[in-house]
Image (tube, rainbow, N blue to C red; front, side, top):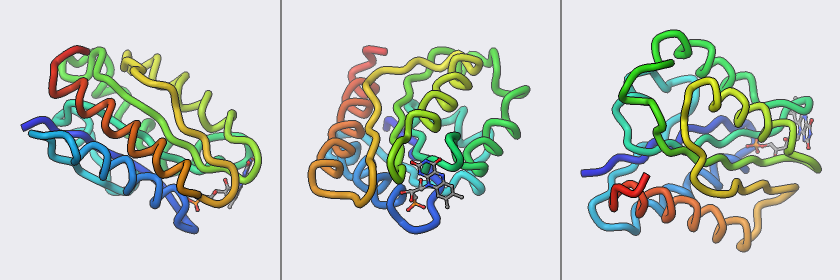
Length: 153
Ligand SMILES: Cc1cc2nc3c(=O)[nH]c(=O)nc-3n(C[C@H](O)[C@H](O)[C@H](O)COP(=O)(O)O)c2cc1C
């Protein structure tokens, strides 16, 4: 079984809705299990034991949410350089009021430090979550799941 971990933070539900759509897309691929987890409850073992990672954050003050940053802060020393995480595939999805690029670039910069491998273009939602965004989130989940299942990363 291949496991995709979808980690998110959400206060008003938009990022959570996106996370659920990423999970739905991933689950549509055979032989995939998904773990959908709030960033505050996510541990180093969750990161190490999954085959692919999806990070979802709202943009707060031009940056990722503190809960996502906290996950990185809590796990960086122990995760960096571990063979289980080296070049592990990841994707990002962002919910923002009107921008989202600050949250995206801050996550991507940290993922370089973790030596994770970005495998698909991110989804940035601005404002309410519509069907088009949900469909792109499902696609994000499908792509990372199918790639992990096929072992192409
Ligand atoms: C404390 C705070 C700071 C925010 N800062 C930004 C920001 O810098 N740029 C932006 O586009 N939206 C900003 N927003 C709006 C949120 O990113 C947006 O409402 C998002 O969809 C919330 O996601 P959620 O429903 O998953 O909580 C901010 C919201 C809060 C609560």
